[in-house]
Image 1 (cartoon, rainbow, N blue to C red):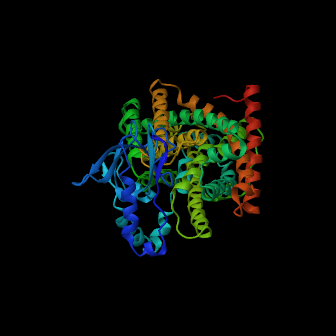
Image 2 (image 1 turned 120 degrees about the vertical axis):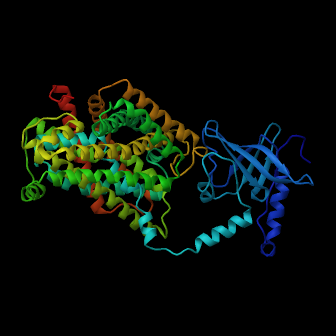
Image 3 (image 1 turned 180 degrees about the horizontal axis):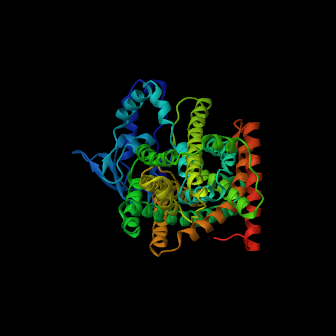
Length: 553
């Protein structure tokens, strides 16, 4: 006999072959265990989908009984600010552990079931038998072209989000200053970007963990904290600059001050990121990214000499003046952004790709290629449009908005509106990725669950960090901090952080303890090392420029 108050555990035994022929036997064991449940007990599930490592823990709020007094379902409450009530049928209970002051209930639930729920209103899980039938039916669905199209997500968004306000500013200024002289660098940076994002995605696919969590586990928490701290500061500055850029885009369209648009834009993006499910959010932001096509149209309106452009693209043009090298370094740094690396590792863990690991990697590669190529194509036409017009007429600009205004007398009024639409689209796609990567970095270091594929009440800590980062950025924007200063110092931090992240990528991708038999190949390693050397050289050049006073903001 156990003493009063000692631990008691009601287990659901693994069914024998005879019991498997009697499906009600499993249900009877579960219902028997459910009678031991009491309000206040903590809830966990076998796979951790309910966020038992989160900031807030799920607990039994109430019990629903039938006329005979037996427990039919359990009302579970999760979340402090992002609250959610779930009604869980008794046959979902696996076992109950009772202790003197509290207890724990273990249940069975699938991640897909929770993803189908809303973010706020109370909902009920289906019974175990009903859920099993739905799971079998879902497994019988055939694949098609739509399956391939659905794989376009984190990689494509990573490539497009790299063209945020800081990158747009860098590309516009580079085209105005260097003309077509740096187009060959975009051609060179495309396979570099592809290799970096591919490595990030493969690490996420194989480990099922985010960048920060892998660094923390295999290389120590101090490194993870350092990387997260630098990334968070840089990201907050970039988000503030992006909010101002979106406001400036609307100002160019309607004539009102950018200040009037910052708060509504921030609120709308926060709502979409927080309360949209991951698949819907991907579709919304991919549609928003179509605004970036405006840069392509602007370049065509400028009527450039395509023969000259093609020659500049394939033949390297070397200029050893300090400002030219600085511009080239900034261009490469804008392409290989640290926040897209964090986004890609975690984003890959959230995408369900069909088939064995070899097929999943093929689908992942398609996604990565679409992002790396499309992102650099947009950057390419951005440079072409300003090089054809502003560089030819020796006009100097300091922001992308300046470029939009300067294009009017040279190309016509439509150029300003197209450039403004591109500015809005670039910021709208980049801010969610910046916010998510900020939260990924912190939660990976702390050990909290993370992911946009989970609802706010599942990953409350993650969404609170995301919301806090947006709030701080909004305050910076409204306090009229100079966006050019914010972009400059964010690029300084990113320029120092990028080589460190690439070094970690190279080490992780070739670490058997992390990747097992799925380490990256020789060609990817060559491009990773080349990228590391280029960005390390860029970081040294940046530090030299800052110390010598030659690099101005």
